[in-house]
Image (cartoon, rainbow, N blue to C red; front, top):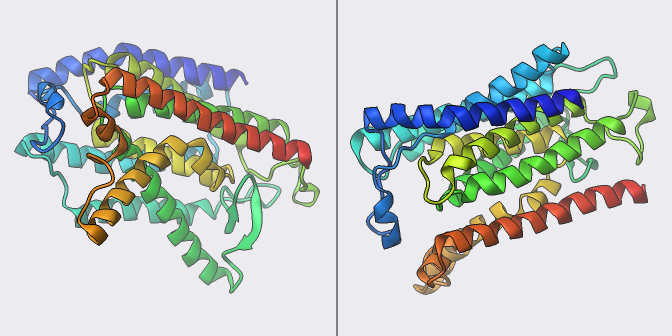
Length: 360
């Protein structure tokens, strides 16, 4: 538990103090945000605001996690390293996307093809490695079972190990792509994605700590009162580091934002969320805990699908937060209310998680 507190506190302090230094660097280099002309007109005043703030979130997370390990003397676990690899790898893809936008002063960065290639390489590597590194109880960081609150009976390896590996890689990459795009779409208002991420990753600190306290001691003692997660406490330490980094970054990202996280931050946070959900065996539960992200994605899917079928729009603009902007809501009002909704989703998800254990 000490590692969790140190990780979260250290990453928060690094992000809080490091963000203004990074802002000055970006201002000197004139790395400012490009604003689309077809977006809400209120966003035009944000043109030139420093972006790529996700670099701070990633660095603070890595340093917070590493600092906690040094202080407590805990050796890095496979699960923690895999989540951090996924987060950093997708952050690099997002960084390249942001840099191209800034250097060429356009709203489009990496082409869709190269973005998919980059995300795919990171995602496939993560998925393959997640089925390796068994511990003394023969548990690997991930499993081929689809999970809700724990592994279900739906096993992707029902046709053999090779088919199972292929299906798991496809399933894991679907989750990685879905969550990274979900956070990316949510990152449209000052402090929105950072605040929602803070709440969601805070929930995963609780999930990891609880799983650690109720972990199965061996492969043969698994049951409804314990969890088969390989390294639950280490996952909680990583989640705490991400939570702290978002907390410190939000101080500068709240309206009026002094810096944006950019694709660097949103893809990294989405990757971290996907990694935590896969390795904590809560893949479906994550859709409830991160329900605010899901709502934003659904609004975009509904808008596009309905327009293609009928030629009309359901919302004034998608994603959902832009609809409320064009309806006259203030930016701060939208962000705070979305934070509240995110908190309700998290409360519901954590409640279901705990209720399942009690029932078991």
